[in-house]
Image 1: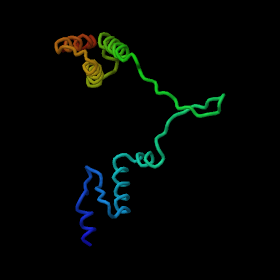
Image 2: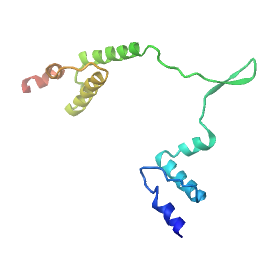
Image 3: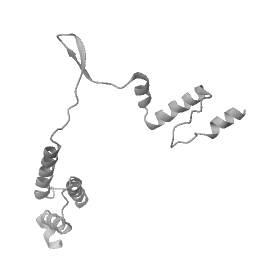
Image 4: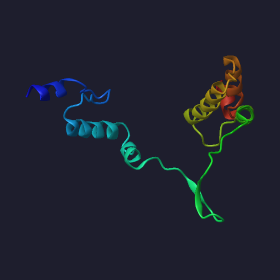
Length: 143
């Protein structure tokens, strides 16, 4: 009875895994399974079966060869191309026909936020100027 009280008293939290003190392993393993599945349901399958490693069949030797992951070696070049594309979208930004103002502001904010995240922030007054210029002619008298 005292042993069971000790197991329940320690390690019972949704923020940390259950504590294994060397006793009552079936209870601990069930609690651990529940804890891991609560975090990520497919994680338990990975623990039991191992990770999925994509592979290809070598036709000559009839062996499975793990595929290599494709990594952008020129990260700066990828970043610069993203900045160039977003800058073009920013410069050519216009309100679409039939688009309401909230949808237009959402599109515009997404472009400016992505540019900021990539390290090219735009000054506030430039954003306001670009936004006013992007409005259609029927909005001009109101602005």
